[in-house]
Length: 607
Image (cartoon, rainbow, N blue to C red):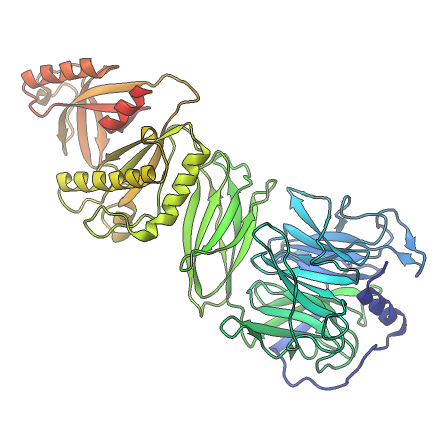
């Protein structure tokens, strides 16, 4: 069964005439400067019909619909003696679109299958089948079986095209249901908390007219909609228009005609625009084409208003470089609202999302059996389009692994947690709840400003504050230990403010997995000397102490004796060293060749 816009396309293919033509010049164009429109070439276009291009926001992948003789089943629609529709994919490599291939079953069938909407990251797709809208999701490199949308979207009438908002929480679709303003109207529906599409709302008379609107596309900037219309002032037939939504007023701007040469006296439909705003894609019949309807790229050197958004993309892998399917949450740091949830592709590890300018965002990445990753991205309101490549390696949640809790905040010289720390602490709590067999050390660290005693005390109080918060929010006290290391474990130079900022931190270390039931090997040694000078093993400074061992730490050389498996023997050795004249001798503990706090060592030995 062929949808209304398909019939219009067929009429245009075979007659070249317009269904409706107002023959009015548009009042203004939204694109200025030099515009070139060129076919994608025979790599994509064929002697058959290609139309409704859909692109990922970064233009790396394109899906389109075609009626070529390679469609699944290779059968023709008997009503029109042309091949059934199938969906094809083309990938861009080194700036060139590659030869397309069918996306195959279960999306394509032996009847009509058309792609009508694609999420900006290319992980979800809206499909048109027999008058209704379906949805499919990309699982690695395979598209899953399409699912028909609910009765809120699909009615007993015809729903022809649909698209996603940049968050994936809103869809726009076209329907000829009788409660509209005209024939085909554009509606929107929001995703409910249950994950269903809610009751639709007509976009109103600012967008819809008494005639037909169709081929709706929402740009990744989150506010600009593109659609084809017969009812606004057109050059003839369907023209492509744009309108911008104002969050403050809750209204759409008066639609603007994209103007010549994009629009013609014929039907101009199925327009999509790259996130950058530099290239658009649509289907048209023009001289010099490859066959019937072809896909063209519109190159625009400049626009009146460049898109204000940041495209964030990259890969998520483990430390071996293998792709990880991870959940990605984007949060408005001011309102604490989760704006969108997406995930990386499990086969490639790739992810992609757009962030409209004018907000401060928090990004959280989580995956089973891995530490979470979090970061902030602040995009000023006037920030123009930019791309941010950010590939991330997740650390496994294994014994001996640790992460820095990047977004904990304390006042200067204070240990009380500030309210804005709650988001990061919530992530830590979630990780602990998901891994109930893991025990953790929470450690505080400082830069080297101030005395060692002052920094040891401050770092310990901050670590203790974090532990107390975690206990107050349901984490068992038996799973936690805290330690303060002062400035003894820097991860960056203390010679710059940027380095000192990195050193002022709280870390989360997995010290045991009680489910593994492996023996915990704690080594106790007695430290007898710490100096900025380095001494040979037989130096007189060691007073005849045997088997002296050296380890370097923060520009100092520290010397220990002994390698004992229990604290009682270590304390006895400490007394012996004091008798030999090492009055500041004390016991230190090591776990997996790393020095750890004594309370951490005792905690490990408890289990």
